[in-house]
Amino acid sequence: MAKELTVALIQSHLIWENPEANRALFSERIDSISDAVDVIILPEMFTTGFTMNPQNVLFEEKSKTIAWMQEWARKKDAAIVGSIVDSEEGKFYNRLWFVAPEGMSTYDKKHTFTLAGEDKVYHPGTSKVILEYRGFTICPMICYDLRFPVWARNVEGYDALIYVANWPKPRISAWDTLLKARAIENMAYCIGVNRIGKDSSGHEYSGHSAVYDVLGNPLAYSEKEEILYATLTKEHIDTYRNKLRFLEDRDEFSLL
Image 1 (cartoon, one colour):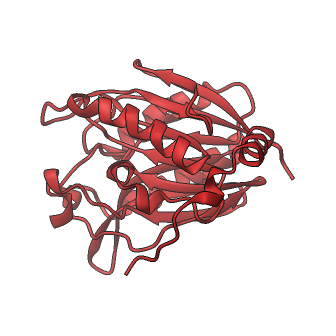
Image 2 (spheres, rainbow, N blue to C red):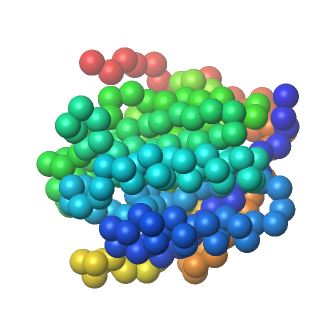
Image 3 (cartoon, helix red, strand yellow):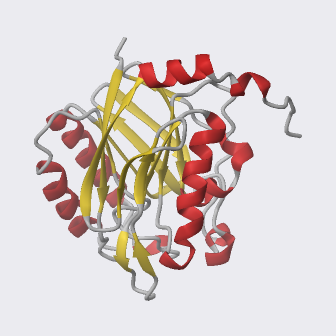
């Protein structure tokens, strides 16, 4: 079983509602990764930006993007992770794809962002996803999910949370605080990948992509356009979960 997992976080601007251009942009970023990594994480809606006009995204762009993710997963021998505009049975979803050389998993955003009207456009997910990858147990989530600790509650014993986001600059202090809190309260690594730059509505994004360990210590952090790296270790998780048995003292309750 693998004892380490190396992650690369690509903090980038996005080109509005232009999947082809964004795939080209991220191809350059991914190609520039020279060292071996296990997971490459992109922002939320990385092919379009946080659009509330999913009808502007051609249906065939989904298959093109998934094929593109599969190609880079094979080339880099790494999982490619990010959310895209997706559709199924006439409903739109903000769907995260975790595309590894060994196979694929998906997660649909549970908490659609009502402040932007996402709830009126995208159908919410209903299932928490826990996946196994190279010896690590991972829980992927999307942006606004970060504000809801019960949804992220570590009852499964996962090793790492991953949040992909388009989190705007005016509320970036909440992003910083909540990423750290999710790591501490769940005694798990917490990874957040945000975009940078401005979208077509003038909303500004300041990055702050980061990786926190189980004690809330930052392993990576940036406010500029770049690729961040961090290595997660089983030893770190096991050492502090055995020494500080906080998860064993958590309250027991069921959601109705």
